[in-house]
Length: 271
Image (tube, rainbow, N blue to C red; front, side, top):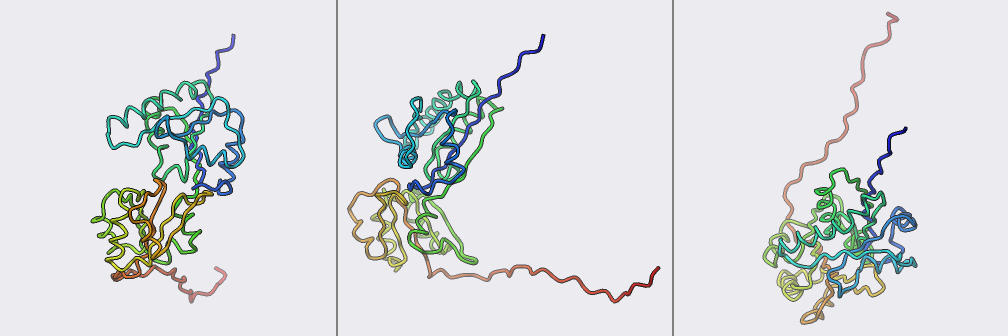
């Protein structure tokens, strides 16, 4: 009598969908979305909101599978509430993985960049250390924004900082002294203060605001157009790019050049 075979655990696959445009979904992500077997899961802030990641997938013409599941990740800084939410999401999909079925987690942008995927992965690994994970990289909102604006994200030896604006205007001002390109994510709560800062530092003309990069409802404002944002509401999926040409650069170490091998003076003597 043969020994019973063990069912392999399914894989958790983070499917990065890019910033919003259906044609920015990579071929690797698209191939995963075409598979019939995996369970689709997607993040929600609450059961009363819609999933932006799911909207990107549906925008591509794909129908939502009948058994797709929403996973709730609340917008809060309360560590205990977050831990409970991550555990609920992990225990929701763990039986599916244990049955041998793959689980796709849809992510806007890139799954390794300010994404909820990391929280889900770590929690599941704590429950099932044998879990296999695949992460499909995607186009970030700031790279899509630079392409849309036709400005370089970085050149040659530029320094770059990517910072949630929630750290405050004082930190942003300190960073301006050290970085050529500043990407401020999630600027919604501080948009007025950030515009004031750019005006005071005479960098308003070097600022670009992008809301829902790559999506049909994308909004782009540059330079003095940023002033129209004062007192207005902006979407959570908004960023501010600042190209700081005033930064004082220190001395830089030149890159090493490959030295050519010294030529030998020896000749073949037949020995």
